[in-house]
Image (cartoon, rainbow over the protein chains, first blue to last red):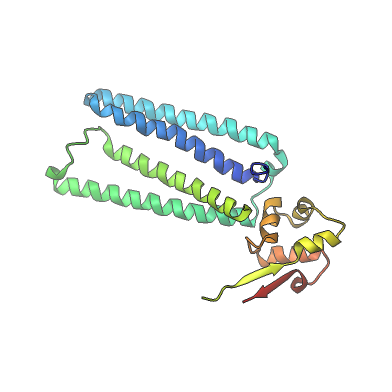
Length: 159
Length: 70
């Protein structure tokens, strides 16, 4: 099967970023859900530590895996994106932007609602820094959508 | 709904150009091999500039390489 061999450098890069983001931040949100049982300060410390570890892990893995992909085909890695790759990236960026914007607007709406109607706060979610986590969730989902859209477009035109 | 499409003779022209590979054509045009494959299969419509570059590689007028049909 030439499924993997038929991928351009940028498609491989999109796959790598999608998988890294999914694994690292999937684990981030899974661990985060367990922090609700801790007291406020402990949950805050644990969440910040988890966030820092996740960001470092993503940076290290992105550098390592992209270096490996680039080493396999240095010529392609050095070449600028062609018009089809630019069009795919542009469309994927649009999708990611819409989701990120929607998340930010929803978080702003929630903040305004709680400012004027504090009694409406959902007491079942005891996680400290909830706004930060909601924004992170929106950001990660928009990144997954961005990489996923790129992969979908590459596969669609390859098959 | 009317379906618009652009057909091409790139595969045939590559064959007659001494079995030119997709990679060779891609390098001559300045795109990736995957983009040439996508154009050849009709999965991607190239820009006018890339279409002209492809035609130039085969030394053919544009309309002999790409055909537009409704």
